Picture 1: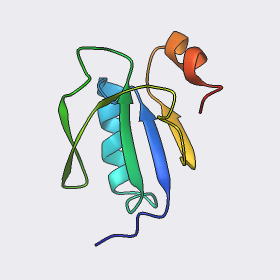
Picture 2: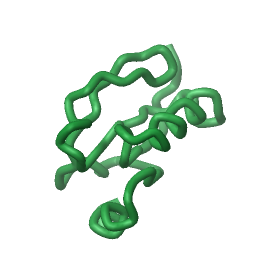
Picture 3: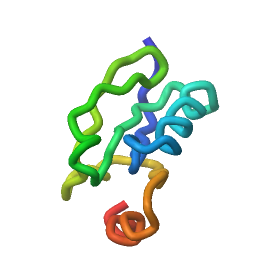
Length: 88
């Protein structure tokens, strides 16, 4: 099992850019990190996504979404980035 010592929040996981970023993270130095897939778009929430051969759900962003995260990547609309940047 991989080391999950780092936690990463990926906001906009339901977008094409978010999917591409997720794929790149899976083969990068962050491959062993615990990646939280987040999205503000209701259509993306609850969808299954693969991160490095592991299936996970895209979650709605809430007050606790960034707790314990070491990094946050935003692959979303600039307005959503502005909305959640302080929390991250």
